[in-house]
Length: 100
Image (cartoon, rainbow, N blue to C red; front, side):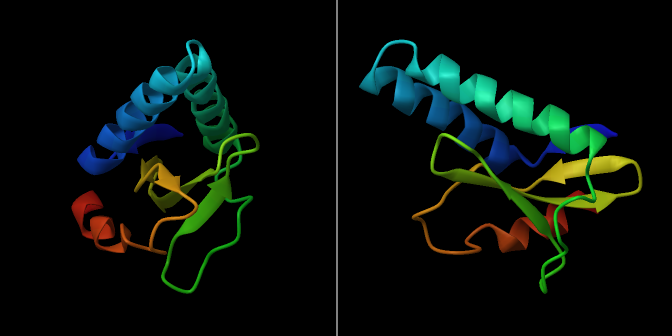
């Protein structure tokens, strides 16, 4: 399965790396590695997460307080956000329209 990011999700990923690297050297790299490993797992198990009422799936990261909401369009897994768990829920939901 091919993985694509909506632009805002890509920005959030880079912002998260930068934020954690500023907090402690090497922490940004750990965040990046966890997101990349999670995306690799999702590419192989894209339907393992339950479909939520608003038509998306999500997977929580194990170490960092983030989750990855995504949708499946054909053979493409669209990443809608790299979302911090304490932000407003579903603030990114309109991004689904950018995957058509």
